[in-house]
Length: 544
Image 1 (cartoon, one colour):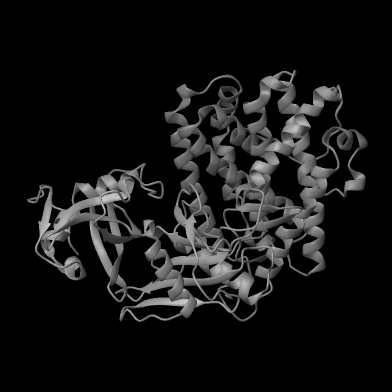
Image 2 (cartoon, rainbow, N blue to C red; image 1 turned 180 degrees about the vertical axis):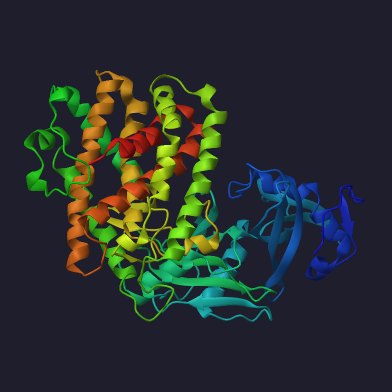
């Protein structure tokens, strides 16, 4: 590996008497390339996940060629080392262009090679590169004499490349729409293992025939010098949609809150139910149906049905050990407690360091949160695997409304990469499927409170009344979702435990998720810290 020197001996303009085809073997170029210029470029990218840490230096872990005739591109596996003594790996494909007008915003390094002046850029900006990798998947040929592996699914029916365009502003990866009917996702942060998004997509689509996720069409992986299989890109069907369920739910909840005034509803007289009580729509009180409308509950039933079907598919495998259901055991208990206690202490530190940013309801709640921190910690410790009879399966792992597409009256589930803070190994741990359900419930909670924060002045009610109405609505959302979900799960013999076990796991997972959220809100949006704090204290105060 080649480390960046503190003082680069080379200064721009960079001139190298070497062909592009052999540039990556030229040590003076590597020294210049891994200098501050690349660091500055990386720091500007949306997909870079190390912004909260201090970058120390960049190493070239490994590279490979993607070549066809005179076209030569390099795939770089970069190791980014941080001052805090850890590192991350990233994938960056590069190309050389001489056109002065091209990719002005995405230039990495100006240079002259063999008397030709130009720029190194991210190759994904080039349609020729996108066409080449698509055609490699289409033909499933790896003729680069490198350990690059192309895989094509039986569901891949395309016979030619026609066009491509960037999908939009993604955060952690870069997605390109091909032929207006498929999407190739280039993974930016990479791991020394198969990416969970690739594994789950291929399993659900090819092996289980689950229709409500974008169909798996193909992938690109690389076998590195340590013989690790690294997923670089995933090709999937482009699902027609009207946006994600987060935006959909925000609009629907806004209508519900607007109805408070339109229907002259007295919030104090709204009926409520105990948390986690399953409800068929016919059992929802008429006052709630009159206020919220029937439509939103029907859509919640549809979302619950697709969630249950995903878990039924994931829990129905008995050959592939990566997906076979398993029971709770002491190893899982120890792993879970260690992970959550570490996370809780991390969030506690974040809260204590940012107390001065809080006011109003958030300040009241955080005071109670700190007073009861030992009680919350005991909740995480109170996990006895011997009392749990349900099964653990591979789950989505980062399930929320933003991971669901709305397609007319239906829903499609996507992005199985897992929780961003987790290691690649932790993302593949089997969990109770209700962990995903808890994730979507926390997302419902956010959609309700986001409306109160963003549109509160449009509703002629006090914030206290809006919070009360929101908590009431949240309980009915949960009730209708749970009834459909649990009923379908039990019909298909997936063991999610007895009734009290289900309540315990939901509370445990909701508490875990809300504590996870609290760290982000304290650091980024202190005003919104009230949402996870309400969630945490709602669970702690619910003794039923």
